[in-house]
Image (cartoon, rainbow, N blue to C red; front, side, top):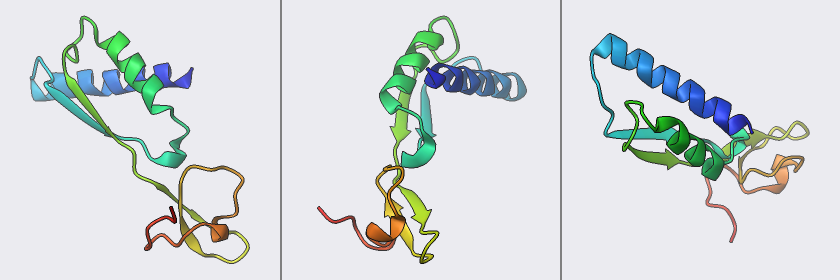
Length: 102
């Protein structure tokens, strides 16, 4: 589960910032996990909650944004919004500047 490793890295970054900025508690943490990041958001949230116990992140509200990814078709060069599908030619998806088809 790579989300545990990602959560551990996030905790290390927060602890490093706490040392530099001299704070002892985090009330909220906002993260961005793009659709193509390869990270399962629910698993990341679970890992963060588990690692937060006894740390300055304990009790913090964690907000995780999940913006859509973008992909450029290697065949035609079209930049498209990607809902996270791998192996799909991006030129078959709607353009990045248009909302996805429902």
